[in-house]
Length: 161
Image (cartoon, rainbow, N blue to C red; front, side, top):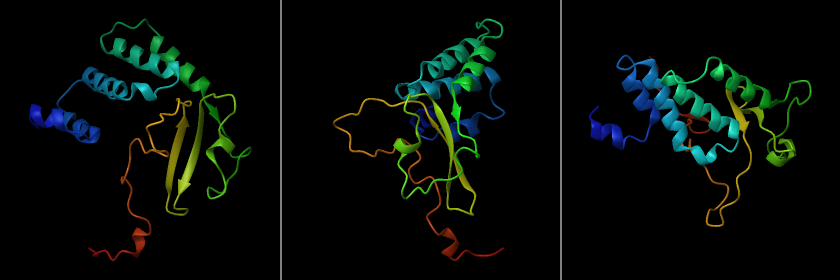
């Protein structure tokens, strides 16, 4: 991959694949931090931003001992996780996100299963709400558009062997 190809690439996975075996753990950490910097405005929780800053300092051995562990624990403690016993299942055709997100605005993680029986399980992390942009049409997909196989892919004839 040339420098021009690297700079033009819009797919982080391609960049990561290129780096495997060619770079140090430090550079991998800084690459991850750079990706987070690219979505900085979406990191609504200050703890997430702090984690990126600490990770950058860790890459250069500038973080205090245990600082990364502290940040990791703060983020873990900030999550409100729904257990299977308290929230078994909700019909997504009749349930709004506002029905399940905490009213206090705390971070919240939940699992969403798409294509029941096919194993398309996604963990969703709600970090907070940003003010609505009057120029944006909602809902608005930030990333991942067209990243999954089409619905009912099992109906498409596939060559065997």
